[in-house]
Image (cartoon, rainbow, N blue to C red; front, side, top):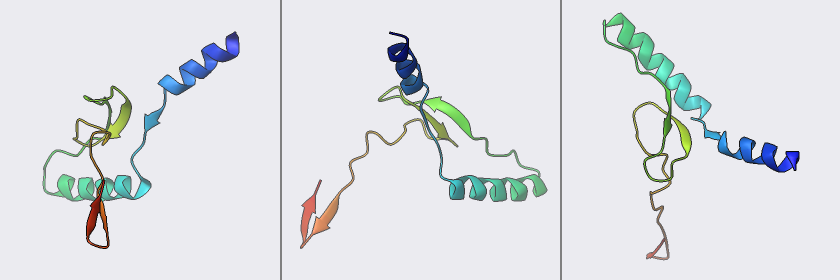
Amino acid sequence: MESLAQETVVSTNKIKLLPVAVIKEIEQQNKARRLMGLSTIEIKTRTCLNCSGLFQSAGRRTCGCNTVHTSSLAGVEII
């Protein structure tokens, strides 16, 4: 019974993290913004407006769960 409770806690605490390259880019932008006297970009943990999941963000309000990725194969759009 305790293992089920622990699994539930682990799954609800899962946060979608930003890629390392994106975090490094934001840090570089923040260095430039400090030199210009502007406010820095903050990475926050937010709750998605669509799926209510937790994710790291520097401004967006959705985690990307509602975006439809399309591609084409031989000129035909695939969703």
